[in-house]
Length: 105
Image: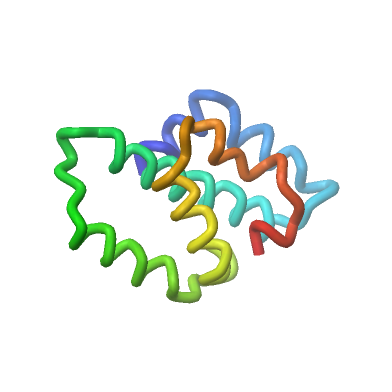
């Protein structure tokens, strides 16, 4: 939820919803949610104080493999963006706005 606040403060949410004339709102929602999840996974790995463990990793993998509602994406999309966040070199690798629709299904 913290990154949703960052999305608001940085203008990502406003810009995203302005795309509703060219992109359906479910896809916009998925782009927002998948970006948030990707960044959250990145923060867990780089934030030493989180104490992210192998057990936490396995729980995340189980979660990634579950189908979410239409606003949060398929298991394949969650797995892609979740793992991307875990292994990203930088937060910019979580930019869901520059990929095709198939990567945010």
